[in-house]
Image (cartoon, rainbow, N blue to C red; front, side, top):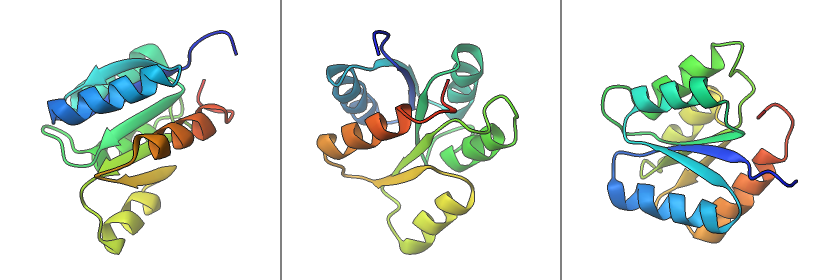
Length: 128
């Protein structure tokens, strides 16, 4: 694949946003960053990324609401979406998967785990 796959990353914590951005760029992805759920929706709809990584707890719209809206839109229904969250109870994880998350990554996470997940999901059809 000669073109770097685009990932939209949304997190309201600047340090996490920078870490995810740097990790994915080093692994060969292009990254667009958002600090709110509204910004994430706008970026996904405008740029058709191969993958979205969404923090669950964000202002305006949380990651679960963004996930629901993307799954409810025919243009983005098959977009691979990773939920990233400090909410690590089994009920939180189950809720994310019930709403259509492709993967649920608990904070703190290992950068190698994020890279493996991103590569797996970006290679799947439907993220284009």
